[in-house]
Length: 433
Image (cartoon, rainbow, N blue to C red; front, side, top):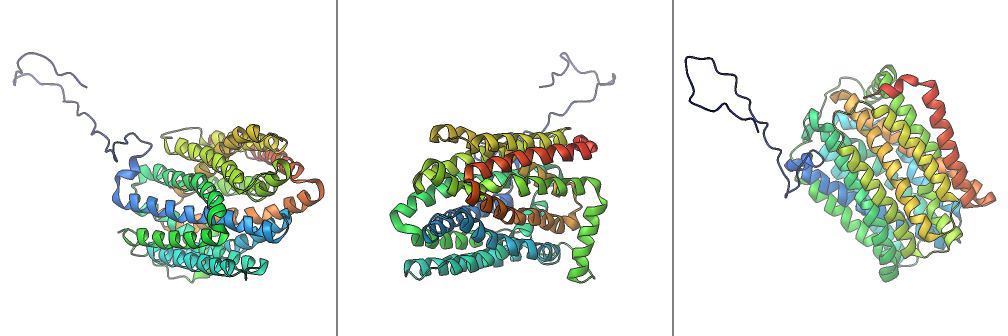
């Protein structure tokens, strides 16, 4: 509070300029401060609700799919990696096209179509499972379709934030959406694990379908994203090429994309191998596996909220590199534990470090990109995530030969080594702000 001079004011004497107190920050249901400031905006609240609903469905679906694969394939870790790869392949192939379309077609429309497709796919798998007609080939086909829908959904879902949130709050909005997604990593697996006991995997798929339809309804009330962001005279192929050329000539964006591939190739294997590791190392059931994944999600939520609270940081490059190395160390140590109690805090730390890296990397990709290129840049970021399940295939094969704990430890050590090599080869990246 600025104190004004006491005593009567003399109009003949020049008075010092009055200091205007900053406008108090708006609060959303009593929550104040910079961490949650984007939630004060109506459209962002609906987008946030849509993200939470959509990713709750996705995490429940992934858990139910993995448990179904383990049941059909006699606990084979390679089968899990194989089916998960089916989800990733279309994301890798379709992401570039979907990114160009996200800059040419209204982003809200893209999200509605993609989520409707996801709902239909989950409904069909639920029916096949309930009638005992489900087979590995059906899960493979559904993985391909779900991956394609994900590829069309995510670039638009990420890029539409810039149409809702002012530029100076963009990092906060992106990180908050990541925190909403990470909340579902807590609730989704835990809910699916316990629901499988009550209503089996078929019932979980029916709930997943309903959640996807609910996400469509929450997107439909958003006012932003009704018009295309740009009207290019180039073909879609030309727009895709322009996006890659833009990323290649921007050193910061190129560094962020290269760095994103390192944990995707060497650090994300735990997402695919954790169910097999839990059965092999700890001999747990679906409810205990759900708690393990929930614990990892709690760490991920804390990490994304940490990124949402960052404002004016000048050492984001160092934070990215440090979180990636920490991620590798935590993963390598976790892989060798044989105690359920010890595994929980280690997974919490894995979730925290990985979330800080992923949230900050994807945030900086969008912040550093020009508005008309954000859909395409986010699609390139999606392509890195698409490699994740594919990269798990060699680690799945290694797990078949030497055991899942050894495969996970190798994954963590390789993540550390390649991050250090990147930091040595690209020293200027440490100065990224």
